[in-house]
Image (cartoon, rainbow, N blue to C red; front, side, top):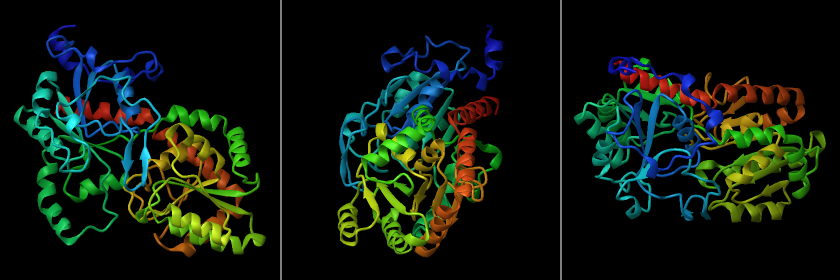
Length: 436
């Protein structure tokens, strides 16, 4: 291929071959630096705070695209070793491989950084390491960590297009000072990026609010381990029966699942109040059972209340990722009453299995082209309105045909927003950067 042909070659979504992702493992030790890279491939760098279980499938899928050479730069090693999650109030060790299947490196300061807060992620070496790789496009996860700003500055100095991905939204109230600072500073900061990988409707509304041209949006939903969840969905009936038998839940009970940290912002007490309401109306409706999957500061108080009032509630505590799919399979619906959640991936996991979604209007994953679509696979109610939440659950429990219709819609919608959609969005954005 000539230099001219290589320059004009477009990156195509047809270059993505998911079937080969399990056959080839690429590690950082196999990286070819810039003088060894083929000229006909786009060098694509991705800078992220630390290995995160939900993003790993995205990296592996990108690594299989013939038209690009991917390298992920991690700022720290948080998540690789067991760590104490303060909001979850428990020690967490992810039971999955976070690093194989894609080229990566840990920046030199990584071992010294033990937390992933905005001021904690500080890697002055990122520019030097990016220069060694010589990327033609750089993607940063977020903009509120110092290393991401260092990477953006390196891109500007070296005339390398920078892309941004995040899940910011406008749904939750910010302090007056924060709103003023964002109104003044964010339009200038966001103007430094060539384009944006957007995760949903509310995320796009956020960028548009701060002056970003929608023509620079490329939808790329956050990924999940969809192979695991799809396999569970194919075996849903058996997993449903096994889980319910193991936890003493009857086959005819209408199981409402909530997944997440048991902290105040997730509003776990709303569902507990609903459990009391549903218990009092049990004779006039199907028997309901609420399952909490997650740990946090509120769990002991929740357990005490459940025991004292003999509520139809099961508290599982922390459930690791390798067992979570079977919990979804046991449920009839996922409820997410949170008051602050930009784009929770539990909704994608639930939709992949085929669960209808019941969410508060503060959850940022609702929208006409997002994973939670009101009137199709989702019911949206006013956050904190326990009566509205109870009414919605009662209605769904009494309308199995509605639940079945919403379940099919969840499966269809997830297929529209799966890993291929994420990769297609990234490839289109890379092509946009190349042509601009």
